[in-house]
Structure formats: C-alpha cells, structure tokens
Image 1 (cartoon, rainbow, N blue to C red):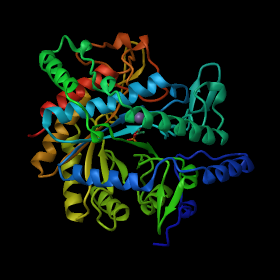
Image 2: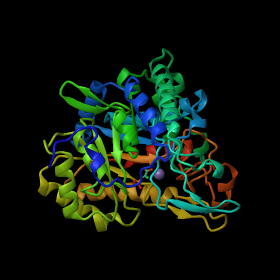
Image 3: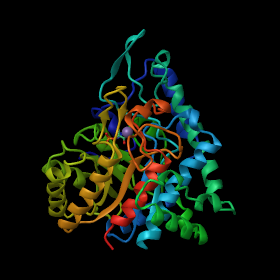
Image 4: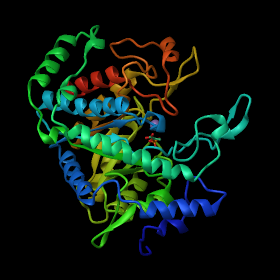
Length: 430
Ligand code: PEP
Ligand code: MN
C-alpha cells in the first residue's frame, strides 16, 4: 500500500462523486474551504471514539438518526430544535428503560451529499435530467440539477450555522423542552400507559451534561469537499467537518477512492454493510479500515432489510470474529426496507418492517455471542410529516400525500421514532 495523504484517494476510481465542468470555480471553492476553520475539534472525535468503543462492548447504546438528505431550507431554529430534541429524547428513553447510557449521533450539519442508484431520472416536462444528489451538489427543482461547486460553500455555511445553534441550544440553562416527550399520538398503543409513565419519570429528573451531549455525522461522499476539511492534529489527520463520517453501501469498493480516503483519517468511521457484502470482502475491508485494531474506530452499519438478516448477519459476525478486528455493530433498519406505495407510487417504508429488522438483528447478535451497539434511523423531529406507514398513530398509505417533504428517502416522523425508541428499550437484553 502506498503512503496515505488527504489527497491520495485522487488516483483511485471514485464512485458517485459530482465532477465539475468549471474547474477554475471548483478549485477556488475548494481552496477557500481548505482555509475555513474546522467545524468540530479532533478531541471531540476522540471522545466519540471512546464512547463507540463502550457501545461495542455493550456498555452503551448508540442512537443515530436524522434526515436522509438534510435540506438547506430546513436550517431554521424550530426545525433544528425538533431534530436535536428527537435524537436526545430517544437516548433518554432507552437510558431510562434499560439503565444503560446512550450516545447520540445526529445525521446533521453536513448530510448534504447523496449517492443515487441512477445518475439521471425522467421528469415529465424536463426529459432525462441529472438525479438530485443533495443540496451540496445540485438543487431539487428540476431546473437546478446542474452540478454547481459553489454549493459546497453554501453547505459549509449551513453546517456552521446549524452546529453553532445546536451547541448553544443543548448547553442552555432550561432543559425542560428536551425532557418533554410528547406521547399524545400513541394513545391507541396497548403500551400507552407505560410510555406515558416513562415520559413522566424522564420529565421529573434533571439532566446531566452527558445526557445532553450530541455528535454530528454525515456520509462522506464528495471527497474533494471532505479533503478540504481534513486537517492535521499533531502527526495525524482528522476530517473536522463532523465527528463521525461513514462510507455508503455504494462507495465501499475495496480498491476505490472512498476506502483510500477513509483509511487515513483518525475519526471514528462507519461503513454500511448491505446484502451484497461477501464475508471475505468484509474481512479485508475491516483490516484496511482498522489496521491497528482500535476499539471504537470502526462501526459496521448493517442494512439488510426485514427477513434478510438471518441470511447475511451470522456470516458477517463470523468473518469479523475471524479477523480479530474490533468493530461496533449498528443496525440501520431503514435502508433495506424501501417499498413503493401502491395507491400513490410514493417511496415509503413500514414501521413494522423497521421494528422487525431491529429485533431480528438484536436476536442474531445475541445468538452469535456478539453485541448490537446501536440503531440508525432516518427520521424527522416534525410531528406532521407523512412519509412512513404505520406506528400506533396508524399512518396509512393514503395519508402519505398529506405532508411528504423528503427530497430523498422517507423518514419516520416524531411520534413513529419516539415509539420505536420505547420499543427498542423494552426489547433490549437486561
Ligand atoms: C443513507 O444512509 O442515506 C444511504 C444512502 O444509505 P446506504 O448507503 O446504506 O444505501
Ligand atoms: Mn437514505
């Protein structure tokens, strides 16, 4: 293997990245980004690594979640508050029920770059146009689909504003909004009484600084952007645009650019593991990404789909054991569970499938003598979003058209996600 540098990925094949026609503008933007201050500190990334190591050993449980594609238009006070509150509250719920501390990671302040299954799409009135690839790359409106490098700077400003607001919000004196869990949409659940009692108890206690601690994360897809925010700390390099960055299921090819970039940064990192991952490939991948066998460095985010975990996970667990590389296992229970609603053709997911995958994965880890360290969901703190079907609020397929906001994958709404946290807490091994 040749020596790693923040730009050594450039000689490898890069999948999914936007390429810019106007190289001069792109260079100017990237030069500017490389001079702007980092968004997070390397010691914060180190702290997250310590917490992820604990989750890998079963001493802590990770709640990671947020938008599929974070939108620049959602960078406003109310929405950001709701988004952070949701993740923190899910952590509080699981902690309260299980007595195990949690670690809260938001898909926020930079989740603006999306890999897509197809580079183009047919849009009536516009013909075959480029697919939307996240606000960092192009606009959602069909007329704005050109890849525009200036958007990378907009992404930085939005990330900075988001992070600045959230850090202040989480450290303010009055934490009652964070402790106020709203269970009113779960009245039809047979477990409503126990959810309400838990919510009351959580409200009655004061919060410790650790319970208010949160971390940021995004899929590091657009590597020229990530390189510009990769900074030295002593003799090491960190991606200081987020605490944790992950490799998507579409960009994890062993000899390609993303693996090359990720192997050299010192952040804790994630990698998505889907049904196409071979056992031997996984072994090789984790040895490249965690050669020093450091606990907390590497999180494997499995996303097989409900009913498919039994086919893939035991083999993956065995491969990891044989490699001797420590990993923290996380269950992304959304990306293998996409369906198209029959009545309106909207992309959706069923709460039941999401819960089934989490419970299945929990049981398989237990059976295989392994540990599930946390969950990963696409969700929004907005109560009225209608993108996912089910939950005790009984969101039906027909209701999806009411308030379908997402630019990319469908997200659980506030009540669906909070209910999931209660159920996960209740199902977790004591
Ligand atoms: C995502 O997390 O939004 C995503 C695209 O996931 P995956 O890479 O697992 O498909
Ligand atoms: Mn997604």
